[in-house]
Image 1 (tube, rainbow, N blue to C red):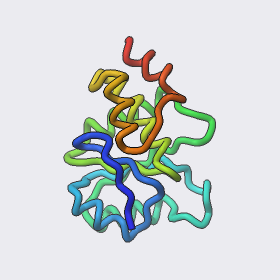
Image 2: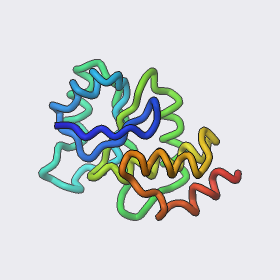
Image 3: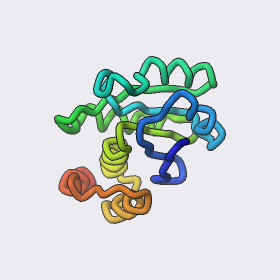
Image 4: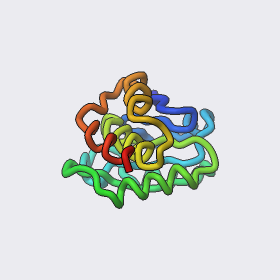
Length: 144
């Protein structure tokens, strides 16, 4: 059973997905799956290669932008901006709980000016995520 949480009209965040969630993602209009979970973080969870293979066999694009527990880098934010800009449809980003995916989406939104910090925080809150731990980063990127 999937737990795709709507962050925007084009982006969903989700806790760890399984290969059987790919069909539901495709049915929701997803064309790109972004994996924000490093392989090996939980050896019992489906690893990136398995999700990538299932996504590709379903005709979906797949991209890995792993976010470890050390935090976010400018390069990872840039990769997420590129992934979102290049997606031909909706995007499903996932990690263990969906929090890192939401944070990365929020930072990408702030960096591009696609939404104000308040709009970003409200969208995340509506999806069940709290971006207050990274709010200073959101504000800094939005001010650029």
